[in-house]
Amino acid sequence: MPVSTVPFIQEPPLTVQADAARRRIEELLRAEEELILPRWHAIAKAPADELREIYLALLSGFQEGEDLTEVRGALAELSRSRARQGHTPSDTARAVFGLKEAVYETVERDGTAEALLGFTWFSRLIDDLGLFTFESYASAREKIILDQAEQLLELSTPVVKLWDGIVAVPLVGTLDSARTQVVMEKLLQTLVDNGAEHAVIDITGVPAVDTQVAQHLLKTVFAARLMGAECVISGIRPQIAHTIVTLGIEFGDIVTKASLADALAYMLRRRGIEISQAERPRIAVRTEHR
Amino acid sequence: MTGDGPLPIVSNADIVAVRQQVRTAAVESGFSLIDQTKVVTAASELARNALVYAGGGQVRIEVVENARRRGLRLEFHDEGPGIPDVEQALTDGWTTGSGLGLGLSGSRRLVDEFDLDSVPGKGTTVTVTKWAR
Amino acid sequence: MMERIPILKLGDTLIVSIQGDLEDQGVLALQEDLADKVVMTGARGVIIDISAVEIVDSYIGRMLATIADILRMLDADTVVVGMRPAVAITLVELGLSLGGVRTALDLEKGVALLDHVRSTPR
Image (cartoon, rainbow over all chains, first blue to last red):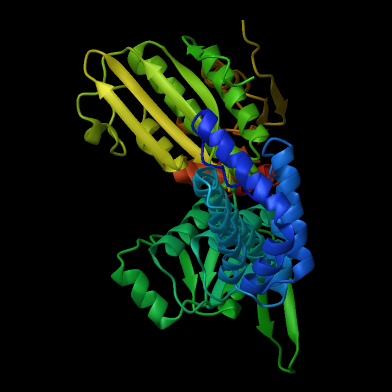
């Protein structure tokens, strides 16, 4: 996900006065760099070289007619490096806001009306940049979370082949609506890919289901039927059975089994395969034509 | 291709054309295969509704964007008899035509946002939005 | 004018493979053609392959169910094969069931299903 850009507040058309005020601030920033930068460094408690980079980017940005792309780049970098060192985004934003204080001292000393007027504009600009560090921090975090969620989803939804024509999805952990949907799509695709006419959705490892998740499970079973396959749900815990009944969710004619083993035995029977134990502990498999 | 103005819905062939246009727009907006299928199916239902109940209409296909994702907005408009009881029209199985009465209620379940605006005697506008996941 | 969907005959089974996006009249024509052909050939089973169909809306879904009902009265069993997962999920979401239409994953399983259905007494 790209770092979203904070739109700068739409400036009213420049009056001669406001223009002069801005120029005064620019002049001060340029002239008093030697004073402002160390002061900012003292307030912000951030690496001096990075602050300097931002400061210079700001100055050159002004020269380019307020093109702040470079400043944002430097800020995003600052935000990242400080996050790695364990600083919170508030720390970073506060460091940026510190520039206001440092500049204000210079403005006060200057004392001209232009400088004071310009400071209002400058202060708003810095507020926006401070918020931008927040945004870039948040979106970097969000990307990490999304990536991890996706990886987790991949990891946590295996579809396994149990027998020729029988596949199973053992679900482990809390099911939310998004994950259930992924499982559903993956299972249905597997039916096509393997030519499997029977599938078991095993929810032994699922601690709880809510209405939405139960609905998704039902939809999966119905969708599989439309495609010409049969789904059995196994491993329903007593609490979950209780929830489902209490919520009034209609499972209708969907086959449910207590355990994955029961579901497999049921599916094998449906496929005309009989398993019987011989006298000696040995399993004999006989296939019947359906 | 989208935003070139509304597509007319005056014949059965137009329903197919609407489906194809919506499909193209959904692919361009990065929809998953399932979401493409859902939004195209919803479009097909709503286009057919406009044709069957209002004798025709039009649809505007628009790619929309918010801070986090892209989506498709479809605005179906007709100048038919309108729907006197919107609440009832959105009930499964309710129909005045020969269909199953799943057009409106069903397509609502296929999209993320559904907005129905109908003035009896004037016409109906159905606006649906689906976001790419 | 739209093209009619070709119907193949294999033994006492008719096979139709629907390709691409269906126009409403196309489905209607298919219904008529299949009924005629079943009567003409005395076919006992019909397989409709929709593996190339990208969307099935409520109209097409209902037509498939109607076709199956009509052919049933003409003593032929219908199996719809190859429905894509995305189509199946969408149909369920739409709230549409195909009524009594039999379904199978692919053509081969459709043929096997027809054999099975016909070997079991009704």
